[in-house]
Every structure is written in C-alpha cells, then in structure tokens.
Length: 473
Image 1 (cartoon, helix red, strand yellow):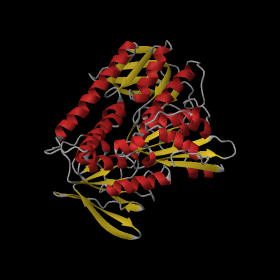
Image 2: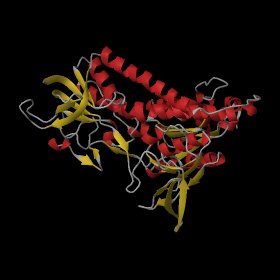
Image 3: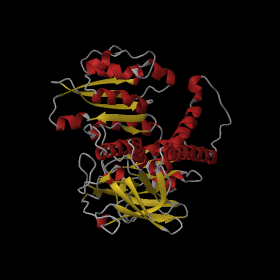
C-alpha cells in the first residue's frame, strides 16, 4: 500500500512530533513513522524519567535535612520500587498526551521500522520511506518533504559495553529495580553529573571520573568548580584529568573494577556497578540513507541553516544532526524545518542562544557564551556575579550555595552569556534567554523590577553587578 502526504517525519521523538504538529497546523497532511513509542528518548529513556528520579532523590535528601527547618522526622524509609512506579506513571501520562495530540491534529502514525528508499516507481526522487509494520506488512510513504528525526543512543566505549547488570548506560540505569551500594560513573558531562547527584541523594556511594580538567567541560569554569565543590561536600568522589584504560574492566560477583590513569599513575577503581555516560551517538545507521545523496560530518547528518540536507526536500533535525542534542533544541529545529518547507517567515537559528540545563542539586543553567568563549571570539568582556547567599528567598529555601554570572561586551553593552548554579536556576534561565533574544543590555534587565522575596532577584542583581551597581552587596 502507498500513502502520499505533504510531510513525512521519520522518528516520533520530541523534535519529530513537534515538527508534525507544526506541519498539521499549517494545513499539511502528515505521517509520522515511529518504530517504538511516540515521545522517543526524551520521554521514555531520558529527560522525563531521569528528572522524575532526580525529584524523588531531592525530596528524600530534603527530608534527611529537615531538622535545619525545625522539623524532626523519624522512621523515614526509601521505597525505591515506588519511586520507579511514580516515574512510570508520569511517563505514561505524558505518552498518552502525545498520542492525543496526534489524534487532535489528524496526524497519521505508522508504528514500524522506516527505511528511506531511492527513486522508484512510487517516487522519481529519493525520500520515500518503506515501513515494515509490526505485523510484517509493508507500507510505502511518499511525501513531498521528509524530515529525519531519528535521535540518538548512548555512546559506548569499546570494552565497556553495557550488560544490563554490572555495566550500564543511562537507559539500563533508569530500569534498575534496586539501588547499588556504590556506583562508578565514567563521564562527567550532563548525564554523568545528574546521575552522581541523584545517586548521592539516594545514599549511594558515588565516584565520578572525567577525562577533561573539569566537570561539565562545555560550561563556565567557575560554575564547574562550584559544582565539583558541592558534590564533594555531599560525599561524591570527583576525579578529573583521568583516562579510563581500554579493556581493563573486570566483572565479578561483587561488582566491577576498571583501571584508570591519573597524573601518569595507574590505579584500580571498583564499585557495585559502572555507569558509562560519555555522550550520545546519532541514529543514522540502517535507515536507508545510503539510498540518498545526504552528506555526513563526524557521524551526524549535515544540514544547512534551514535544516535541509543537500537533498533540498529532505530535512534533518535533533540529535541525528549533532549539535546541542537537547529536546528543546530539536523542537525548535523541527519548527524551523516545517516553516521553511511551508514558505513561512524564518528567524536565524543561533544555537548558542539555546538554554542549557543540568538538573543536579543545586541546578546548573546557562545561555550564550561563557567568559572564555567570549574572549576567544575577540570580545572585550565585563562580568558581573552575584551569590545566592545574599538572596533572602534562597536563605528561606535553605539553598544558599551558588551564584549567577553575567558576561557582557564592554563596547556595545550586549549580554553575551549568563551562567547560573543554584536553586531552581533551570527555571530562572528563561529570563536571561529572553533578554539575549531581545538584545537587552545588563542595565535594562537590572532596572526591571523583580519581586521580593523571590529567587529571580538574583538575575537583576547580577546584571547590575556588571556595572558595579548591585544593591545587595
């Protein structure tokens, strides 16, 4: 059977289903092809389930610290099975919501494995998709435009392939039925530090090793140092400038060990389980791209500013094109691709203006350039920094660690970047992102009246600090 449509989306993750909805809103006939569940990695194996676990860990830790608030609690017990059930309930509720949106927007969903095919009797050009359905039947989708949104998977290290029991990726870790006594985490990027924070709050002994000289290698050095200090304060062992030696993993009934090199010296690290979190690899294999003229760069699909591949009717978005590999970035890219194919007005996409969030305790968030990146680009920078310890609401919350840092251009006054570490900064970063999009200056944001007492006051104070005019210090 052949299905013709205006837009086909290969992959029903966050970027894919958002693109599909946008296309339907513009009056296009849309088919989404997804071999697993709508919502993709973010909903089922990433963002949502991990943040659910992080929230449970945070509540558990806050209960343990309740005496600081004048509340005495005894007999507290962690029921990890219930923690996991809560996570699954949240995921299922959101999954049902995505399915409803498909029905509401009259989007046809084919559950099956899609493969792009070359020119054929069905289509004079590549871009049609052969779909093997669950029952073994075949469908051919022939779209005017194809959007590839196949996402990514955890990147593996040779010799450290996940076995689901002792060596885990983040996906296997999410399915743990019980917590280990100890966890060795290889990789101190976003996923690694989130798991380190979560497991430490659950009472697991955690060691995290990172090859770079800091955790969160892409973030501001001051923020990374503060996060490392606070994780260590909570009992996490943090090791940077560490090389994990290939082929040295050893699994026994007691757990897993691995040899690492630090400062030219080899040592062995052991734990009940090992979590490999060294980034994600694009899902571009076995989807028929060899039947097209699509180009690749460093294992990802190459696209232009409009999300087009070098076959103009085929677009690609999200993790499969590399870049930030964030759900909200994929959604934006999906909307851009659809707007372009539909002839709608476009606004230039500036990836450095995409907010970046890390859901550790405390949280980390940033947008724009770090101080070092701005200097490397030739800017003469001015910075302003303000601590949460001077914010009344932070003291009320019992979360006084961290700060907000603003990086601005001295000549133009433009905000170049904002970095945050502290309570609820993943919610506060939206103001900074809006300020940059509107080309606001630190003075304008600082003069904006922020309600008192709120955590948002710190954004205004940090902006005023650029010119040495912060009120609170």
